Image 1 (cartoon, rainbow over the protein chains, first blue to last red):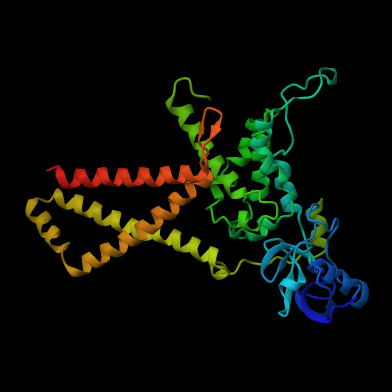
Image 2 (image 1 turned 180 degrees about the vertical axis):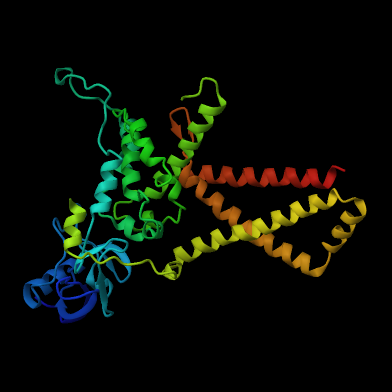
Length: 249
Length: 136
């Protein structure tokens, strides 16, 4: 099984019933070349310390559950290979900018509230009956939003965003990118209803375009671009409404 | 509901350290870009002061003009120019990531959008320079 390689994984531990603040705990493990950080953590949990707590599910970069700070960078732990860190140490911490509930588990309530606030679903003024069939879309219309639909809600972008860490009211990269995704969808009619969240002070205008959210995104969603494009569109819309007599109110 | 439950669990809140921008090269370069604005603001303040001196008469203004030729001013303005160039180049470099340009059904490739932004900047700068040097 083992390839003879041994690596030290240092993990943040926080057990609120016995610690006031997080501490570190190191584990030496033998690993195989195809092991990712998540495999290492599962090995620790299964064979060394069953009390270690962390989230994971699909193990294939789809569910977005296993986001963690790996050597200081937000990563999906199922996509970070231990061999890439060998022979160095691997330091695994909970995602930055979120409260720690236990060990590597963060409290994602704030993100979920903000995600819900942008209404990331198709909104229709009036639903047509099922008997009339699907809402058809051309490949060009699909291409408009497809990139932004790849978001898996892993929250790595929030962990990478110092603005979110400093200004917790900031709606944040993923929520805005997903709102943008639906605004671009030809089937959607809900842009006006999202605008009070996306174009608010706590929305796009809080962003200073550091751009790290797009760098760490495991799905190349580019939330930073979504935010800046919303700034341009919102500004253009405002000028139109003010300057042009036929401008949209 | 969720918040109450987490309070029971004593969720640990971490603070962002004041040195967050030293964490990686990209954060650092962002801060460099932002701080260049300070130098541009200083230049604008100097320019506004110069306009103010115009209202005080030709003699006062000429004296100030003369002082602009001194070494400290020349060095200062050279530094401001460097920072202004850095800010402009990096700012325009972001245009192609933000602005989607369409001509009919064709989407202009991002590198052409970026190129257009740089060329527009150069042309606009050349026009301003020509006006300053040729209009009396």
